[in-house]
Image (cartoon, rainbow, N blue to C red):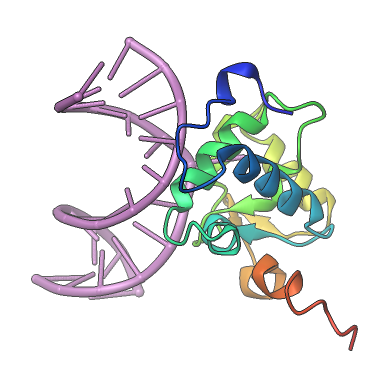
Amino acid sequence: MLPPSLRKNKSPKFDKENFFEKVFAVVKKIPRGRVTNYGAIANYLGTGLSARTVGWAMNSSHILVPPIPAHRVVNRNGLLTGKNHFATPTLMEELLQAEGVEVVDDKIQNFEKLFWNPALELSVKKKRK
DNA sequence: ACCGTGACTGGCA
DNA sequence: ATGCCAGCCACGG
């Protein structure tokens, strides 16, 4: 859960705590071998353009126990911008490649194909084809 | 309470 | 196509 320090709900317009859980929940729901970006999560959460807030939430994710697969979350460019925040700068890349995600020069290959849209997958209920 | 910063994104030059 | 600027949300000092 969240550290006491972060449990300060001073934004009545939006439940921050829920925001955290939501982000974590979504990230944890990302299928293995798939990736998503902050904007998609932000949109799914309803924050819209505030993708930064999502990234900020991820920043606090390292305090979680156990940590969430944040390595599956990258920026819109498919770049591992957050790799530097992991235990080691190469950990994120290692994890992604371990899941079958091809990463070259901190950039996810076929990002469009591997992209997992929560707003779509979680909303459409996935008719399972 | 104000200013600066940040794992971002979209638009314009 | 690449690069710079502005907008957004929340936190820390």
